[in-house]
Image 1 (cartoon, rainbow, N blue to C red):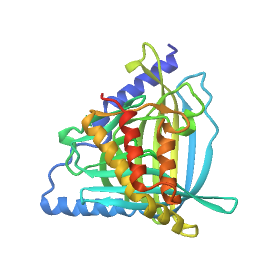
Image 2: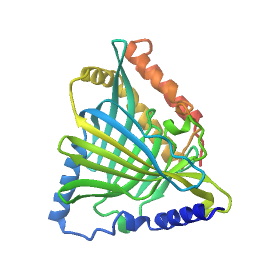
Image 3: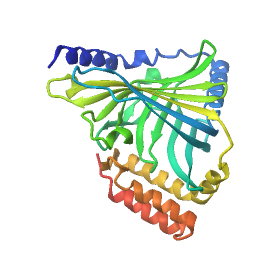
Image 4: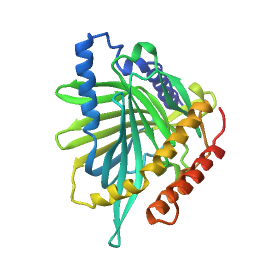
Length: 329
């Protein structure tokens, strides 16, 4: 192994080993009144991410950790997203993102990612390798006052999860995760790159005009003799900026959700059932769509809205697909 690669692997291993420290130390009991006030402030911060936005996606590979690797050029794109609160139990808040696009004068709504926030969870559904998400305990001493964030793909299968504390630093509200593993984003997976997963830190911060989502990704590849059989390839910084904006077809997003929300609730419930009864989720994936059933699950939602299939029949097909394409861990 080249010296530069060895150093990169060693530094990353040290960082991953220090996961609890990165997410800050345990939060001491602050008394009931303070705990309640902080909890309510956290909730308000999470709920503030709902709304209608113009989104800017800014992705940049930066530092190569392998001497022979040439980082990709910076890529910037954008769009419009409506973010809706679809569940709020008090200690769990679910935000669904709906991407609204136009082409040749026609508006399209695409069910985008979903983020679930849970207060003081005992465990999270974490990515552990290709096509596998397993239940991972949150260290008991790190639960008090913290929230987990679990991000789901367009078909409501899991993508990654982490935990951290909402806090105010220099007047800025922000949440930072522990180190997490996550699968390749579609933008990378379709290129069949040498790396096959990310070691990542996730950040959310409110801004005067909306919020930002930072992702600090170390792109990793399999390598014999390296720490944990993996070595770093390149660093990537992703900054997604959500700016409040309503001058697009917001009604289309709400119409899509009104027509399909019962269907997607059943899909979420089925994924939850699989995770609970099969020890997590194991499902085959492909580069273009994520899970191999993703395309059909999205098609069924469109068919419900178009009136070509009933919600009942769509739910039966969707839950059957999830059951037959997952297996016990």
